[in-house]
Length: 285
Figure (tube, rainbow, N blue to C red):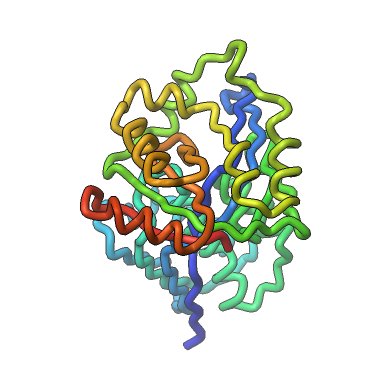
């Protein structure tokens, strides 16, 4: 039986600039997304019929309402396949963390089914299908470094800009609702930074962690820290321990600190690992 095992990488937002609310209820955004080495493992196998999903994290839904199930159903329907699929997910990415664990799993399922059944779908077609399921999913078809814009589903990858960064990623152990974050975001002077993207692209081209760290920005960060001050305390801790720059990813609550190099990241980790349960040293991929 044909099967494939794929790493399902998490992402961080080096920039997350929420520009305006749309009439359809979504928001116009511009974001520079970066995949990191923290990853789930997804195994895709042929099945005679039906969709079966197993996950080692009991909090992840596996029924027909789950994103993973809907993803498998959509690609099988679109390709008119009269077969099923078996999906096993080994979770490392925390739920509701701002690292897009559900979206990366969805993209991995699309890619995995495409390979297992030799469907021959292009990345553009997979991104199109992914965009029908969730705004972050198209990014994960290719990973790397990319500009996401419109509602987040339109993606332009930077083939010549691949920063080599070491980071300390820290999750406080609770979830922040993306829906809550968008509903409570106020638009006004100061939180729409239209020049942020160009500054970050220039910083990425230098490849210098110091320059990239100086240009981090997230429209949600101040608001979420006001609601959850422990996130702000994590930021202060990472900076105190030597991170060049620290930012919340997505709508939170995960924080990441950019280190000067691998040794610096390991030193930060070593100094604070006893205080936190969910902390990793990762690199960009």
